[in-house]
Every structure is written in structure tokens, then in C-alpha cells.
Image 1 (cartoon, rainbow over the protein chains, first blue to last red):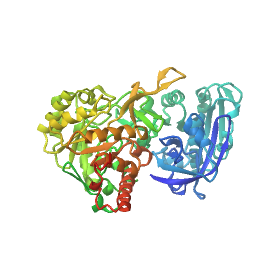
Image 2 (image 1 turned 180 degrees about the vertical axis):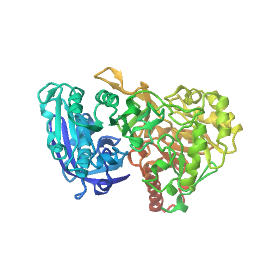
Image 3 (image 1 turned 60 degrees about the vertical axis):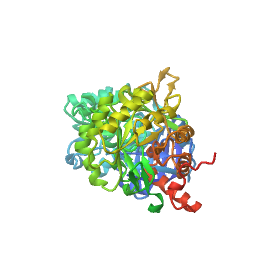
Image 4 (image 1 turned 90 degrees about the vertical axis):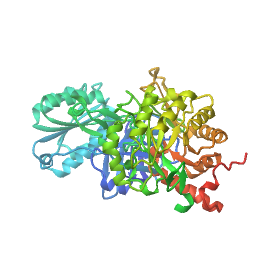
Length: 263
Length: 306
């Protein structure tokens, strides 16, 4: 973990309210793992606290990281208006990221990655990680988005996945409905041994419960309002369902075994 | 940093710098070791410890506000037994040279005494009595808004410890000097001020409070002018040393508190934003002293020309 003065390389529009930002932050990028996050801040900007974002992808050779975020409030609006070459403070990499079983990295069985909305972002790097470990057996991806305007995710994912299943809330692309509606077919089609999910809690709950019923190892990435990102403010704690332990999402997660969250 | 120039004795508590990490914003100190040298931290003030473990409040606990933030954590902590058996030994092992102050609260005057007795052990350099958490009924606020109750808590704590006792005051009172005088008369070795100011945020889409606890404690730069005013008022009222805090982000901010009458300062919410702030604020004070040709930080304390 460290704080680095990053540089905005590019900042662009992906859909109505989704933006991407590429930041040069070589020290953070060098040690970043899939599923980890950063907290960024425009110094002398209009917000006080940093804002947490999952690391969408990294280019280790160039020392760059990709963030994909929805413009939701003052902080994200300000980020969206940052010009290339402006400075941005990057704290990270934070949290522990996804765990990968040895057999999973060795290509035994299939991994299903599921993302909902901007929760798809950290799954890009996760897909890359698996695809680079096993070019012959890339993960299957299930993405749940609002509508056909949000299909831009596919471009980020296609090189790292064997197939991408899409659901949209309004049926304007892929299957109409939620990600969970597509899950039974995917489980019937592939020998899924591992599932990793990032998305809204309500979405993850249904998917994780189905995974647990089928006995498939499942990890979920959580999000909650936090101030510090390093386990100090205690804004993001919850009680583990299985262990009864008090976990800090920022420090002990953000990724947890599904049983610990939704049992 | 010229450590001779900024070494501070705060109510008998020896510190390498006059800058502490404020309770609730600095964990137990070790969380920050990736970001700063703990040897350059004036003191770690622990997260508030209570007699039993606490899970804290439900729902949203953090909200950004103009130039600051609200929190309603609700004193989540592992309880004093786990603190003494697991956390304190680890802190002493990994940060043996850093001054450590334990912050605590309890439900009754008697329990404050019991806590003080339990904390009267090696490895703790001073204790900070929390009578001002605005988010929990048992967080001491009932003691922090009534001068007689505050005095009773202070006496109970003093009776059970040999350590220097700092009483942390709430700004959510009509006249903070009355509270400061009451705890001074009851034997407090120092006062810390201010704890957070009670506030709230409403979500206009849902017509619901944003915070799970409805109200929370406001901190950050937004509260600095109020904190500074209160430190100045208290400095004109009591003789015991003052730990000044509330929105300090820079060395300049800290110098203002020192001039107003604080002997030492603590950095709070700013730790969340810049995790090396406790050290950069100390460096800022040291630079200020150097530029002003002053030989020791104590030359600033209470020197406001008003």
C-alpha cells in the first residue's frame, strides 16, 4: 500500500453516465492484483474524502491502470472533468483481491466471472489474469447491464473470455432479465468449478445462493461507504455469517467467500 | 525534522512530536505503518475501547459533507479484554518507541473506574477518557454534557490509575468552558477538544436520513474554526494542558491551535485522506519554527495576540 501522485492519461465516455480513466501510477500498478481497489483524489479538488474504485485493468509494462466508474455525485463528476496530464493522487493497491485456486490457475475446470453494472469493472483484470494463466481455457463471463447502451464492456472482455453471456434489464440486448436468469443455462453448459462476482448486493445474493446450493466455490466482491480504505474508519464493517467475525470490507476484503456473506 | 525542537511533554506524557493520531481515525497505529514512520508519530491515540466488544451501528456510517465528513460508527471495537490480550502487545512489539494513549468509554461512573484500573498497565503512556461520543448512548455523551457527571467520571478514573488522564470534551454543549473547568477541578491532568459536532444529511430522493444512525459526528476542515474558538476559550479558563483537535490538515492549522493555547494537537479525519498526515503536520510545525527562528514548539503555545 502506498500513495502515489498519478497522472491522468486519458478520460473518456463509455455510455450516458459511465466513464473511463487511465492513470499512470507505476508503483501502485506494479503490485496490483485482480479484485483490489484504489482510493483516488484530485488534490485541491471539491471533495474532502478519497473515492474508492475497483481496479478495472492494468498495463504493468506501461505502469497504467484503468478505472471505469458511473458518474453518481460530486466526486465522480469532478473526476470525469479532469483533463489529461492533470495530477491525481492514487492510494493503493488496497484490499486483498480475488483468490485463485492452484487447480484453477492450472486450467482444471472452468471459472465463471459475473459482473453487474459498474461491478463489471474489476472483473476485466480478473478475466485477464485467468486468461493469461490459461490461454486455452479462458473464463466464461456473465454480465448484467441496464440496456444495449452498456455493451461497451464486451470490448474490454472479449480477449480474456471464452464466451460472454449478456442480460439486460429491458431486453434491448442479450437475454431480458437479470444475471441470475441466465445462470442455470451456463451451469448446464459448462463444468463451472469457480464463480467470482462483483455487482449490486441484491444481485450477488441470488447468484451466490444458487452457487452455494450447487456446491460451487464462489467469491463475492463487496462495497460499502468508507472513508479510509485501510481498515481504520470502520465505516465498512460487517459480521461474517459463518465465522461471526467482524470484517472490514476495505482491509479484509473486498472479496469474501460467498458463505461468509450470504449463508 | 528537528526532534529536539518539537519534542513535547503533554501533561507528563513524553512525545517525540506534538502531533497525535486522533482516536477513531488512527486505528491502533499499526494500520499506518506502510505510510509513515511510526517513530515520527507524537502519539497513537487508540480507537475507543469499551468494557465489552461492540459491533457498532447498522446501516450507512460515513457521509461526505462540505469540507468534511459525518460518521456514526458507534464505537465498534473488540472490547478491553481483547485489546489488552491481543492488540496492545502487538502495538508494543511493532511500535515500541511510539507513545500510546488508550481512549475508552463506559456506561457508568463505576465502569469508567474499572476501565481505568484495567488500563493501568505497562505499555500505555496515558489514557483519554471519552465522555463525548455523539453516536452511542453508552459512549459517554450523557457524562459529557453535564458538568457534575463529567466531574464524577473524572474522579472515578483518577482514583483507579497512575497514568496521566486526558478528558475528551464534546462541543455539543452550550459552554464548553464549564465542562473543562468541571473536569479540571475533578483532577483531570489535561483536556482534549473537540470531539465531533452532531450533524445529519437527508437524501432528498428518499426523504430518509443518509446515515443509519440518523445523526452522526461532523469532522474535517469544516469544524476547524469552531474547534479553534473552543480551544482558545478553554485555554482562558483552565490551567491544565489542552490537546487541540478538529479539522487539522496542515502544519499551519496546527500552529493556529498552538497559538490558541493547545500544548499538543491531534490529526483526525485528515488521516483518512492523507495517511501520512500525522507526520507531515509535525514537519509543517517544525518548518514554521525554523522559519520563525524559534527554538522550541512550546514558544507558540497560548501566544495569540488578542
